[in-house]
Image (cartoon, rainbow, N blue to C red; front, side, top):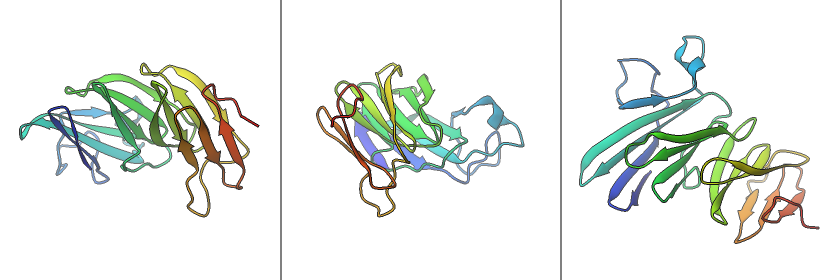
Length: 188
């Protein structure tokens, strides 16, 4: 996926063939980001997402984010660009990377299983996790988290989350619906 931000071109891809710590990769990156345990031979990343940033056709920096957990993919809601940061869901974590050098601003484990998507919400962000919906501020501080009867995925493929100006509508696997206010409290 390619997007523009200010005078930068940012490419975000799934790179399932990438091997952590290998010189034999077809695609190379300037930096590898992952938890320490991934650097061993016994641990294999579930998701690997590459980011390249360029300006006027010249690449400035590239990184690969490798994590273990519920598998994620790149789509229009798996990342968000806000101010001079890109926030990226990878497995059960969200990475906030500074633009254009792609250094880590923060990274947080925001769901036990998987972080599917991230949305802007009242000057913060809402992360759609498999087990929890979490509101975090721009520095990665958790303001609240909400869990329910079942996972926030639907068997019929219908949207399980809808974020509006000041409310969040949710649907779980069993079809239960929830409406949250800006404080993560359920509205009856």
